[in-house]
Length: 166
Image (cartoon, rainbow, N blue to C red; front, side, top):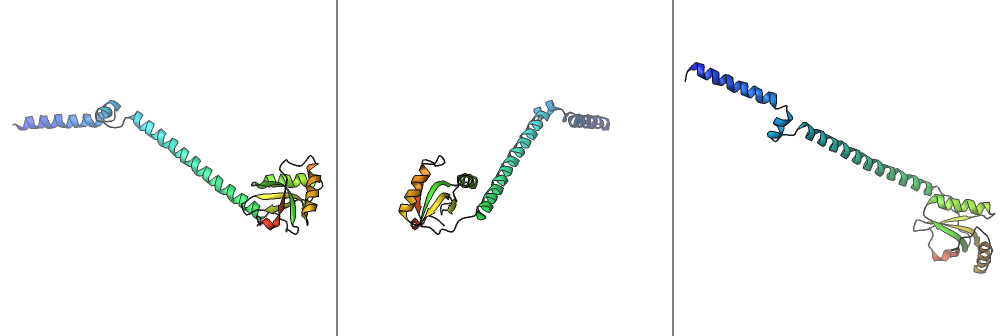
């Protein structure tokens, strides 16, 4: 082969190589070569952004739950629990959430009672309207409370000898 032919072949090869590099930016060429097209890249980018948003929402909700549990623990740590100096208590409710117990305490205060909060070992708080030294006295108070519009249907007498409180 002559040098002229070799130079011409080299020129065609370089031209073909240059055309391949130029056309490799084209989506059609990319799809023919099995490469990701602009549309594929945009779809993948959108999916990654949506996944990042979902992961952030999950992290945020976990953090909110953590902060809420810390707040509840701090509130419950500072609750004013009464010293149990009576044997029997007429209980109007048992509550897991502090604000529900506080609502009952406020309602009883408004009705003229001196309510007592009793922390239970299971994490609940009982709210008693009155404490009594004898069962007979507690039954009498229960009857008076049942006649009051404030009384729920499930009022009961708690004996501290049961040992359910902290």
